Every structure is written in structure tokens, then in C-alpha cells.
Image 1 (spheres, helix red, strand yellow):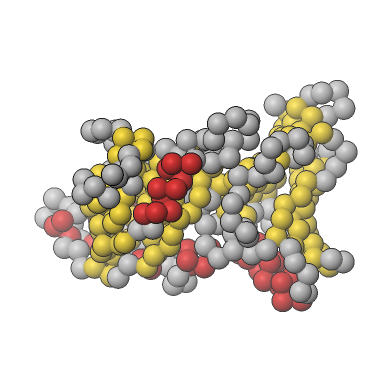
Image 2 (cartoon, rainbow, N blue to C red):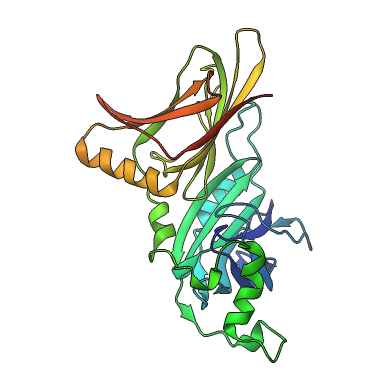
Length: 318
């Protein structure tokens, strides 16, 4: 008998590379169909939760295949096709959920996310609470999409259709002149590296959250008191894109540090240090600086280190 779980489907795309999603639906293990919100502009962010349509029975079989068609507004190119999903892995997550930073029962896996990116890259995640885990990456072929399938305006061209969505999104840019990213960039973002995060300083830490270039988000324990040290189950990690962590000062007042990485810098730093030494795992170190209310970030491998220069960070009281 096919198991059923309470979940919804949602869509996303990289924030700086939005798409027009024409059609998207999942075929479930029991043959039922679950549609994703479609016929719309999508730019929620890679691996982020997008729109949701709560229609029909909330308890559903896991998805087995995906049929999808989208138009990349920057590339002005269509992509689409049918994708066989890792249904068993999705079902494992829907059944077991994620480790809970508050202890007790696991976080319920409540969303199956589908992301579309330039070059036909496509990601599938399962998410619950703040935790998101990547299930699989795919590359779909180009697809010819008639303009009439996207626009009812007989005077529209591909350029005017695309710019109508892009100009409000990038008012200070010239979207028509933007260059698409390197082919396979989001499949490259999905690659994992042997490294571990560390927060240093004289304070009582609580929890560190990291969002990664592959769209995942996980928590890491800073107290050494939780049953589990992290929600991570994979042996290695994708490169970081954002981090936030909380701690208590000497008076008990709580603080939060926020860090945002530059994707090019973090990619280059990991590549450079990995090529210079065989030390593994690398350590990415977050060090709060009270005098500037910022966070210094270092990548370390034994005696070698790199200090990130293009991160954006801030410390504030909670």
C-alpha cells in the first residue's frame, strides 16, 4: 500500500534570475496529480518557499515524476520536460522529518520545493520548519515556447514580454543587457566540500543557522547540550551563502549576528585553500567583534587561513 503524508508543493527560482513558469505538476506514486502554482512570475530565491495552492486532500503519496515548462526571462529561452524524481528519498524525509533544534519530535517535512534556474538547471528539495534539504539536481533541455502561450498581447515581442517583468524587479539595471550566468552554475553550487562551521568568542552560544548555495538551510548546535549537533545528515556541506547565530552576553542579554557571503568570493576562497593544502575538514570560523558590531569570518586549514573581505555582517540585540 502506498503511504500518504501531509505535504504541499511550491516553486522557486534564483532571485536575480527570475523565470515565467508556464506549467508544472507532479505525478504521485499512486497516480494522482499535484499541481504547482504556475502561469506566473517566479523569483523567490533558490531553495526558498514560494507560492502554495492548498487544494484537495492534504495527505498525499510522495511524488514520482515532475512535468514542467518554464521561460527564463534573462536568457529569453524556454526549458522543460519530464523528470524522474528520487521518490524514495523524498518519502524518507516526508516520513521521518528533520532533527529539531528544540528537541522532542522531529520537524515535520511539509513542503516539496521545485526550483528552476538558467541553463535548464532544476532543483528538488524537501523542507520543514526552517530546515531545507536538497534531494536532487537535474538539467532539462531547451524547449520552444510560442509567445502566445505566455502573453495575450498581440503587439508583444519576446523582449517586451521579458522586460515587462524584469524592469520593476531591477529598476536601476538594464535587464535586457544582463549576461546569463555560466552554464551549469546551480549544479556547481550543489557540490559539497569537507568543512565545518565554528563560532568563537567568550560568550554562551546557542544556535547557528546556515543557508547554502545549493538552497539548503541547516542548524548547528553551539551549546553542546542538544541531543544532536546539527540537522545536517550529509557527510559534507555546500558552500555557505548566509549565516545567523545567537548568543548571550555576560549580563544575559541575547544577541544575534547576521552574515551574508559574496558567492564569488566564497567559491574562490574554498577553491584556493583546498588546492593549497590537503587538510580536511576546512573550518569556517565566525568571530563577533563587539567594537564594530560586525562579524569577522575566516576560512582555516591547519596553519593557513583566508579572511573574507566581501561579507556583509551586523550584530544586534534581540
